[in-house]
Image (tube, rainbow, N blue to C red):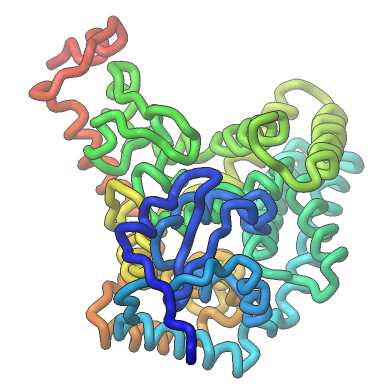
Length: 448
């Protein structure tokens, strides 16, 4: 006689959502991933954020077919009571299967090799301009080339954090450390941890680190309630100082973006120096950053005077600020929410929280794949060279299931972002909801 299946309710499953007690459902089967969280290649945060619920679509989005064979070791023997699949999820999983059969997840194309060559050329030209020219204008241009180098290395870091950009795993890892840690001063470990959390909790004010920029920026008045960041594990206080900065955020946005790289440097050091957080290949990551902090200051010191040194650094930071703006455009003006991300609303969450940028194909190099943000968020393993190919199919999916598909020009995306920041800024100035005042707040608002 066949043994009857054991079932647990969604209510019981939801209780297993704490460190050391993490259960998830994939296609209705219950898995205990409590111990696996410490070894999960994508880090522990995706499991912590989605534990206690069905995560089939998120699992499908992030894992190749070969990952399914490893699930049995975590199977509890129980099934989720009343498990069902929505129509949008059925169609989404069909698309994943179609793209897999077409080889779209494996076809990286020649773009990767060209982009790596471009990085090498930009680095060589920038260094050559500093060392072999006495012209101030050439030094200014060299700073700009360095900024463009960091932008291109950023695309490599972004892509390699989602999928293997080079066929060899060892070469892929070498490319990550070289273009990220060594050339750009950004820890790839920090990037993967931050970016995976962003994708899983897209536009959650409490769980998505890409929306947690207080005291400088607040994309929604909901942040005025001093919400807790579950990524940084701290309260995001909306005090008088924060209100002052937020009140003018639509004016300070672009200047701050020119210096945003300083935050990435700091976040990289904080992660790698943390004893509380697990970091794979920590020593390798630290050595990579040391390489950057040797060659970049040394190159700057080769300039003839302090005026040109400051000019070179400011220029390189300002040019790469374009990329920081690009990262904001896709999400700042989209829908936000408060609360835990929901695993079985994958398509709804990703489309609601993302914005595409309309551009011709010859400008794809400039946007690095971010122009197809909706496609990228739905299919994060898809190489950026294939995003344009699948865009029509994604539009059809969204149209069929009445999901938002927002696509605007680069200029319009900037307008929407500034508009979002301005709306929140004016709300922050509303003294009907006062916070404790300080002298800075009083001084700035004495004009009425």
